[in-house]
Length: 443
Image (cartoon, rainbow, N blue to C red; front, side, top):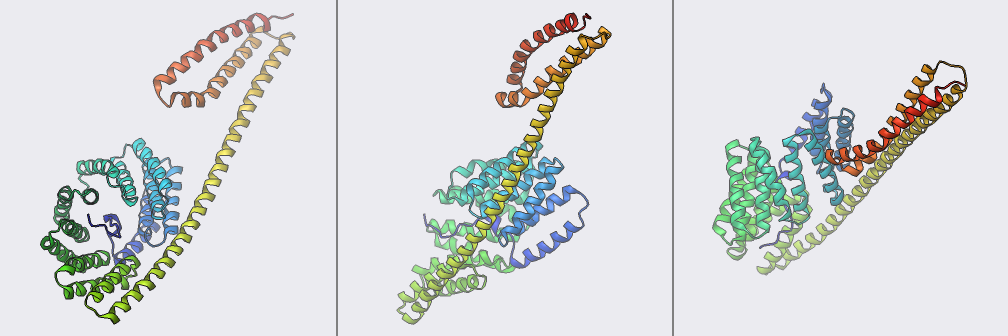
């Protein structure tokens, strides 16, 4: 299969620059007017997504703020949504292991909330993570699960994304017929819902599958349709990609047509600062002009390619610095969380020590009182209270360990509790008898 230098996923091309700016402004206004924490969590996650491709630090800030609000409200669905947003930022900055860990945490929260839509979102994100790692068989299971849920809930927009990403996986697995099956399903739904941005992207993907199948006629047909739709929606990413696709197809048929489309692809990519796409187009133009023996033009574009390579290096360097900064912010947050956990554990231990000291003091007091002329019923009552406190303290102290040993399985937890009770209950009766017979006896 033809290896591409840039992997497209539909999730990244839903907005043009103008649409994104308008969407950001609209979401920020909504956030200011939000009346409930549920609305705030949703809007903060939306802002995180909208900043994902431009300002990852802002994207992380909004996602973490959403998580803070959701956790304070014990809002599991909101926590899952926020964790998905954080996972998206981690994925965007190349921290795949942490992103997967965060998505799995989001999945647990979604399952606790019994939110099918959030479970489907998380499955989609995990699938997208594997696609970004160059894995195309692993994500299919997650994407198909998400597809089934979105079909059941009739969530058409998310279903389209699932269908397209499944199609992309099959394309990279050299299974073009399966790829076309899912892409055509996605196209039909995009047309029926009149989602033009989705439509232009899917047309491009279908064209690229036909390009891989060496069916140049259908590849050109779909690329041209994609170009027309992309122009209408100002989707410069797909517009540049489809033009480059046309240029590649015409390389063996008509050098002038190939030059025409590749120049347009370069101009579009260059004006939008798509460094990788600009560099690929410049490389193609260099080879095309070299084939036509136009040395001046070929030298021009080989120089442009070299300059773009430097620009790409600087961009990647800047992005790497941004990623390192974000990683340090995350590390500092992890340190703060660890300190909070330590402080909670310390407070808990102090309380355990305080309770144990109180129970011990009560026993000592009873021993002292037993040697005084005090109503035996008072001593017996205090003795029973101290015994109850003692055994309840043991049960309280053992509870975290029981949960860990049982792995939250009720049957295992019950068996452990029965075993502990079989020791504590007889001990309780013996001590109770001792209290009645010994401590309540006046000398």
